[in-house]
Length: 100
Image: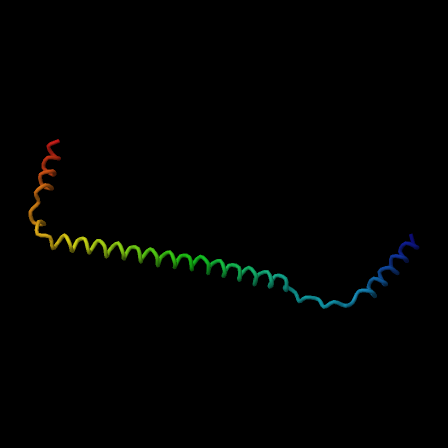
């Protein structure tokens, strides 16, 4: 067993001598790198969602405005109509509906 320990110690010394001294990373370095990567990934994801949301809101508002313009134009056209004050067919249908 003594021979094994001596050979083991000799092998360890040779291995330590063969390895160049590598600088040791400061404490918490890996944690900071991972935290920074996670934060940048979240920012990118948030940016994508907010851009999509703004694009959707803009298109929805534009569509609602277009519908509003069409409705106002139709109402304006009906308001200028001369037969607006004389409900003929509509009144008859409304009265007949309640009889059924």
